[in-house]
Length: 341
Image (cartoon, rainbow, N blue to C red):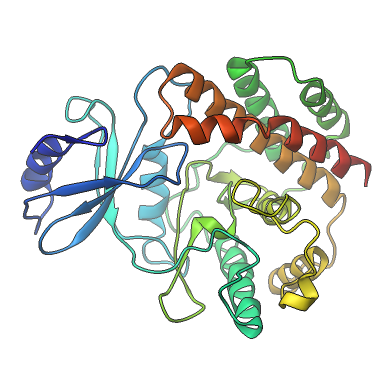
């Protein structure tokens, strides 16, 4: 077996034969085209399917693409009510395929890339978004000490440390001046709230296309893409959902801007936030506009990194990476608007 779409399947087959109980080749691999951060591959054998997720090749920003953290958090959640794929092994040596990687179960099901859910009936749409809210609230209720994740993130003001971290990441991957990003970073620092003591396991990029739903039911079978997970403020995850919905409709924006949600049976931003608060026993959220602006800023910084990797030639999908990178000014503008609302 040789390299398939950037993956040395011969090396993977030999490694899994030696380290994964029950594994038996021959092995075929196919790269998923959707992800832009850590290259992800479907591994197929005559008996079963797996998924391999690896660090991308080339020069990387410090602390980015931490697939070892993804493996750790999903392993810790195996026996909780948060649905995740079953983890099998983590290879921390770079001598096998050139970077560290992990292997998990392939979870069959449905991924919805369009939050309008056009292929579903109106009542089904309400069930899908309701399940999305339920799992988010369950995630934020995880006892991090009990699952061994008490050290998964530093103490202190989550928004403050994340703003500082992503400002550095953005500057390290900056390819041209974007005045709105500079203004947004400055205004986030000026508006930074005091630490209110809320701490939870947060996903960091919670949105509908990072969820696998059961093939024939409105149940989430697995939450994907845990690269940005940490111990942090739960309202950032909630704002991440709302951020996505405020973007334009279509394959790039994947949002709900301008959509008559009531007609489609989808919740408004306010209804989703209220449903989450009811599940979590929260009476109110102060300055949700800041949380929303922070999410727009962080995603803009992530997309800038995607663009930089595409220009450097080590993005998972360079053409798509450049298209996504073009949205950095859009996210920055939305972040400024969120602060003004």
